[in-house]
Image 1 (cartoon, rainbow, N blue to C red):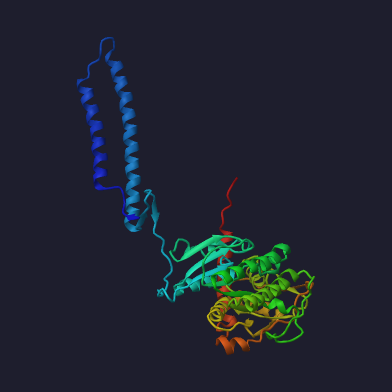
Image 2 (image 1 turned 180 degrees about the vertical axis):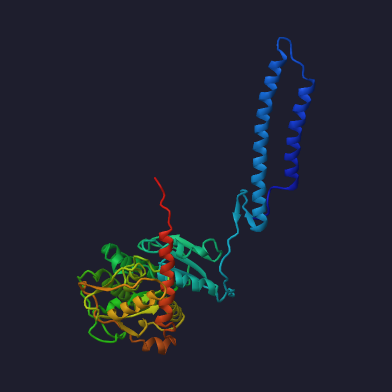
Length: 428
């Protein structure tokens, strides 16, 4: 590819000469052209008038073309372009700064579900570290805009692909995040959720086996169900309803873990398993349906905060950058047993709702009330991770406080809400 612009000074001069010749030619014609036999002088003048108007229109077209090309030239000087072999002028895209890694340290990394909330933040970190990253996503819940900053980068590839179909590529590491994680989305199509977590996981394990790649499973705290042990440790087997409305996800992740350890035992696949607790941060869907996004969106719009049950059930909330740190540390460790990744600070849902109302009221004029709704079936009563294993084997623990994380997340949702308010509908 070459850089440059095809409009030269010579081209502009040629156009100006052409314009001058047109006017000069018609001036000469008006002087020496005599009316042919049978035509009066007025007939000739009318014919010349028509010709002049036609010539003037052609001149105006050339001038407009010249002005347009000059505007492009001015834009070219302020914004360098790349000219493709076909002659198409393309803007040179500016990418975030990335680290340079020597060939031996630079890995080819696959992130399934890399267009999603957590996946896209992981992709950002891996790209900035200097790795070659391949994102696979069917965009059921993921969004291209989450990774659009990297599209076109020489170290980035985006494949619109569903993991339930085999994938034949060469990779060094696989972060298997593909699966809807919000109850709203995974219960929308429970059969698809089961397929993603079973067939999709089998396909990724097969890929890891063939390429001898290390593979990490983004499992979930949901495998503990409605726990009878508190806080939850990795050696707790869980308390799950296998036929309840959440079973497609809970049991899907449980069988995914089973398959990971079967491949590890039988075929010596190098595995990692992260059990992820509630995570929040920018790029969550506004209509995600989970507690953080629900509460923030309702508070920003001055709507009542929806609390299910009496609000005594508890959750712990981890900021997304802490999760990304944990995933990368786990991948690059030698630890093959399950690891809880979550923030052990525990909040009742009622207390958390009041926290959101207070934080939002600092930046807006709204002050939401709290409204109770019936508790959904199989909703866990308590959820808090024991992160002793992560501290011991990964030297990992959360760094971002709830105050800091909520501030960033509320600002993000406020910006997204402003965008929707200023969206101009397209008329049909």
